[in-house]
Image (tube, rainbow, N blue to C red; front, top):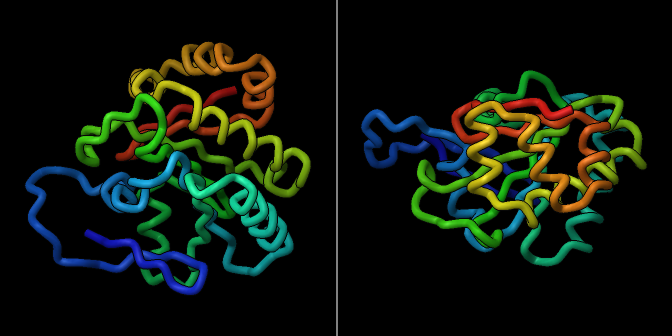
Amino acid sequence: MWTLIEDGGTIRMKPEALRAMGDEQFTWAHLLYGKLGDLKVGIFYFPSRFAAPIDSAVIGALRTFGQNSGATTSVNIWDTRDSEFDHALGLFALKTVPAVVLVTGLQVEGMQPRQPDKTSLYSITIDDPAVLSDLARFQAAINSAHEVLTRSDPKEISSYIRSQKSVAIVAAIGKLAAHIRDEILRWKPKFGLPGGIFVQVG
């Protein structure tokens, strides 16, 4: 099991000998639950290990977005020197970097915080290099994902992810706004649940 450590503008995981969890699977919900308590959206960027131009552009754009989105949106850059970096990727079911993962916070309307494995937390992953490397497309993707996370019913979206109903997710997003639905269909994100369940939309 791990805890989340924030250090100099980046985050990493630290192995910890915590209370026994029995057969309960440790997921990103357990790792982030405390951090998500005061948030509507947590944004986590997993950069490449090459300090590539795409990393600088994405980090700059995300930090600007975070500064202009208020205290309930948190932007976090994962430290690639983290000895647990591969485990972090596994928790979010990431096969490649760079990637951005946006997750619901506990302050989203309709959220019923109970405990990590019984709360309707879900994520939206953007990992298409064509989106990440195109600033205009990336900004539109982040705006759309943020809107979905803050305005959708988390219990409804989580249930659709669990049952692999991508069409139902699209319909639910369409109820928010047609332009958000259309934008999301263009960049084909992955909607996921803690534990590695995910469905691609678009």
